[in-house]
Length: 216
Image: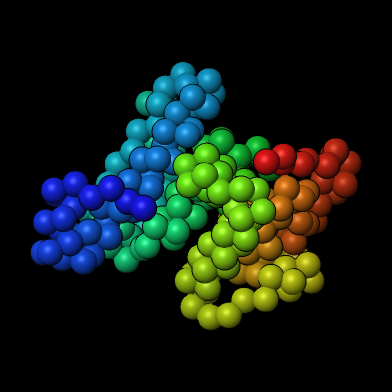
């Protein structure tokens, strides 16, 4: 249960969306606290987190000379609930901390790799912050992933279809929605990455590489 400050109680009276944004920020700050030590080891700096005033829903990650940075817009905070904010920021965390199997000019993990990282990130948050058992965390993480996928697809997705599609432009854009959901679920379950979001060249690389497993 969230702890309400006087400010958040006033926000609840004045505007439900403002109160919601307070809760989402609390969730994000809890997530940042988990990854603070990891950031210090990898980058030598904490993650700089910024809320950008904007009427557009957006979140982004960067890792430049100034160190790792995450940004989310006020409109995204206004529209998202806790679980949506968690899934979104875990994806952005994946750009900073996800394992890169595909080299990019920015040095950040590409979208499919970030989706895979998001699954284990959601699990980490649910177990370490919300105190869920492994089995309950898996069930909750599955629902969070499916809810997020439905939100960006604006419709019902069947994750099994991710096994049947192969995306051919991972370095330029996002894979199909079913593939994105399947990839997050593989991260939740600790399974190896699904091949659906790799283009043919990187699929050959995957066949030659050892399997990667996440242990919760």
